[in-house]
Image (cartoon, rainbow, N blue to C red; front, side, top):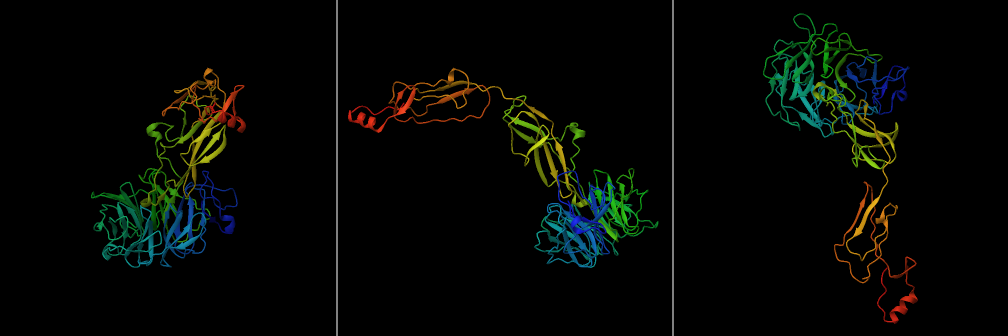
Length: 523
């Protein structure tokens, strides 16, 4: 969840506790709470970080405590920590806020240049963060653990006035100045020197006019052109990430493109979002130019020289149903013993091995993968307990059982329930066989008296002083599966009387020894 505020709302009233429901960013509206996946953006003229729900239900401002953004230009999310990062162009700093608490801080970037940063992205390995220095004509990075960073050794001509950076098959950035274009270089997981020479992307017929912000997904790179083309139009363009010269401008008719700064892509929804600074707002269009296009409803969200965007969505299941049928991806109840139907006393496991969730796409500025998972168990519709995904659950009572797997991330949670399984009473337990291979030992009945002749106690052999050989085997057979407790006891000295083993008194033991009789026999 995320703390939000609207004009006139108190901070205390704006902070919302997390809940494992389909709810996401709950806004502090005066009316009923609303929920949806969201797009975040930065406001370069001091209005902080804003968001709008992707379902069109409005938006708000992200509460930030302690380190308020001054002129943020560029946002990205680290899903492993639940933090949103921004590049503050006025403060020359990389700053962050916790999306749940609003607590904020400044990332240690010692060793790296931070000079009018514009555009920022978390690396694919979630260990480093990268940004473009518009003022220093360079690309820099820092470790997310706060241990500092460095500059990438990229020639000035290939990083002149950069506005935006992203990750794909390496690192990509957009440059303006006298050599506008989209550039890339492969880098190691632990940043340092690029592991390949800097290359300029072949963009074909695509417009490259002061590109500002870019996103990579499915072998393509998309970018916003913050300057007009020869036809005096602003455009959103794309090119393929290979040697093939193929690119163009997206069809965006039906929605405004007005000095766009930054893009974010959701390939599953076939949608690209961009931030309009000219006519402030968030616009979207389909990737193939044939689907819906328009503008998001922003509600009370500030739009003050907006720039750059990042999407945060609830976990989404991979589209398994199209391949394996409508039941694909649901949790499956399995039990031991594998009787049909299961008996009371069986142990259940909620099997989620067929689950498949859409992964994060940091290069597309899309966060959606689950980071936590729990299972709840229900008996006749009433929740009985909670566990992690794999521990077994004892079905002690008869009734109808289900399990619900709930996965969540920083945006919210989604729950999926298994099919119901009915547990029936276990059949009677019968002790069908009870024996030992050496008659020196007495065999008694179980603590729960079963039926059958094998439950009768055996009398000891007449050879009372014989030592049982090593390897004596005890065996029993039950009519069905059950938990059994086996007790082997060493008999004490005594005599048998009235069908019972009675211990010898001290006087009787002394008298027997004085009479030079044999030692008392265990009974």
